[in-house]
Image (cartoon, rainbow, N blue to C red; front, side, top):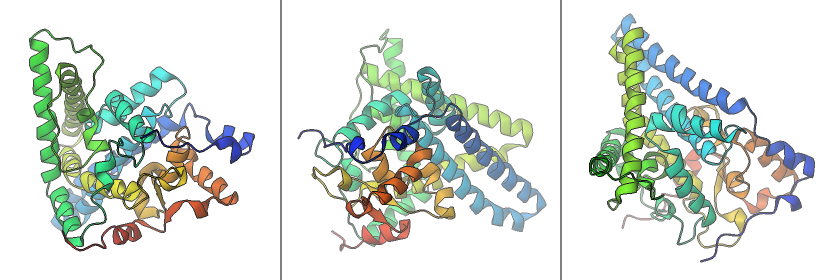
Amino acid sequence: MPAVKAANPRSIFAPEDWAAITRVSPWLGIFQIVHAWAVVAMAAFGAAWAWQQGWLAGLIATPLALALLGGRQLGLAILMHDGAHGLLHPNRKLNNWLGEWPSGAAVGSDLQSYRAYHLTHHKFTQQPEDPDLSLSKPFPTSRASLWRKVARDMSGQTFFKQRVAQFGYALKGVKALLRGSRGDDGKRSTVAGTPFNKQSDDGVSAPPDAAGIAVARTVGRFLLVQAILLTLSLLLWGWTPYLLWLAALATTFQLFLRVRNIAEHACTTTGSEDPFSHARTTYAGFIERATVAPYWVNFHSEHHLFMGVPCYSLPRTHALLGQGGYHAKMTIAPDYLAVLRQVTTSPAV
């Protein structure tokens, strides 16, 4: 099918409004990354301190820490996503570094691989060629099916399956390097970005040398960041802060990622030529913004309509669309629980 029809901002926004919402700040993207890591440190070291006060304080603090850590891990992935769109910083090289290292590498994603994959998703949103269609296609589904997915996420099964696949592809890449392959034929694998982009239960075919090497480099960055975090944890406190980070990466991050994936496109129109129908915006309160909807990712319809808008300008974009009477054309949910109720209405199959 042809690419989806794009919205025309010149027919929707005043020139000065469009210029304002598409301006990429030289400092807000950096501030958001610093903010994410500050929350990570507060949650991890705060829970470690709570355990020193006694087992009861530790038991109370740990679930809160895991929720905050998982939310900021998703936040780092969201910021990498902004980097893939060139929206973290107006300087292209700095933008790519910010998206590659302090954000994407921490959660095992690769900016370049994700960029190619994700822009295809934007080009063919909810069309047969959309590489993310498998995320929304299973819905609506039964509540039992959704709870099974939640159980797999929170028990670490999803994380383990993804990492085994990713590390397996990385091993193929290392073997290719040892054979003398440079991996410079321009091919890249979406597997490197899988923890953020995709959370289906399907397998992925083995990559060619270039893609395998790209995954190996992604895994190398991921392991390096983990080594840095572990070293800082041991130097400043001990094992507990890093173990909490790792536990969140294996549990709450996977669950929040799934909920975010579901909310964005599940049960929206498939195959439509109307750009206002391809994605869902979900209103988010404080708890949701701290967990499943960091850094305004809940304004997903606005992002698909105008992907050149940085995440911090999406609320303003939403307000301007409302002033122009466009909300009636959009898919807007009052909260994430409403979305989950909507997508779990069919009987089990």
